[in-house]
Image 1 (spheres, rainbow, N blue to C red):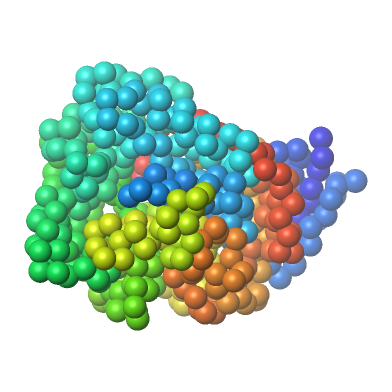
Image 2: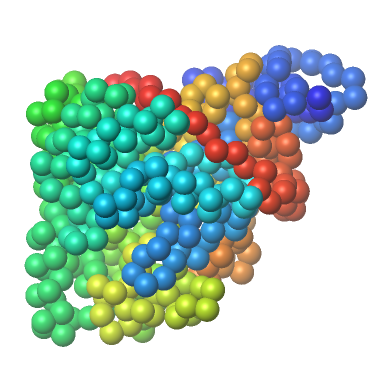
Length: 470
């Protein structure tokens, strides 16, 4: 089998930072040490660079149907963009139709990914209809490698499930070793606030944020953890946490020794509510749920990352174009030009996650190099049942490896990114650091700004139960 030798770099894992060579044999890491030799191996010079595990984004939505359109990245364009940013695995969300079997949703998303994905991928299943049959199906899906399920406390009539359903799903997860992922916002209250705003002719994008206050996220997060506690202290993972009020609840339950976990996203670390005041309809670029918050929340989230109250940084990548349609459908964000509640919720991010967290976190002095790797690769792999196959550089692990140049600089822009969306939330932002060589299972798929991989080479990752640590 083909061998590759990465020489002279500084290996960074969640636990250690050290100078070493890395020998890859086929798809796996074969040796780690200094002065390694390998006759005939392809050599990658990593001097003055970091050698890190490929990033794992455990929250993406490729080609998600939403609000009369679809997320503009599919599994081909979205995973190519991920690779350019240093991410070598994603976990996407399959959506159960009302009354449908969970396996149907899984199979539909596997069909979307098969033949398109260029990096490896796993799946969660969004559960919209909790009944006895669905609870039994959770067991079967876990055996087949889909070990996490997302429930919503928001979007009444579309995704939201009631507290009894949440309690039943949590109880089942406690029995079968699955993980419940929760979108925690008080959907009933938000629905009332939206109707009131529209009745008063408040239709601009900023009202998306004003009708989804941080208190609604804090209340729902508290209630979700209370339900998990009543179910027997079941592990619960809060997705895309944006507000200090919600973070306070994570900290409260973790301090009591309960298995409470949460992720945040770059948009909540770097963007704030004032973006909704951009001229014209441009505030629609930032319509996502939860919405952007006041700037002071950012510092609280950074503290949460440094103190391990937040364990993961993902993206909630779900792009919708501002001025373009998708496969002949109407323009996307403009579906809500006269009604903020009809703006498709979501923004791009899968390509920029690693560099934003490096630049703002490591270069900015907020987190260490190892913590950066932990938040973007290692802990995501552990919580989502992919470790140690993914998320680390170790003998026997998949050779998902990124050579990262800490001295490189780049300017984020829609003109140069690879995501299939016509704007960047970070347009013009200058950042330090770059993924210069990206390997997926030992194969170089990005090198010197060129994509070398093949459409459809990505594989479905069968995941196990989460590895959870306080």
